[in-house]
Length: 85
Image (cartoon, helix red, strand yellow):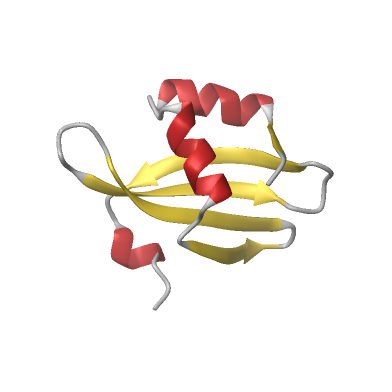
């Protein structure tokens, strides 16, 4: 999927120390795509981060733009909160 990063998403990627390769992988092969609100969809996958801990990497995407725009990205340990059965 073609996508662009918003300025905010670029800053958050760096601030949260999320490797760009992980973002790319989730965007190309998400384990789940979950509607969030209005124009935003969450692309998410369970990812092993350095140190052996698994997190849910959530990428918030506005699919209505061309190309799609990543508006923010974050990882969370609260996998069960966001994971859809």
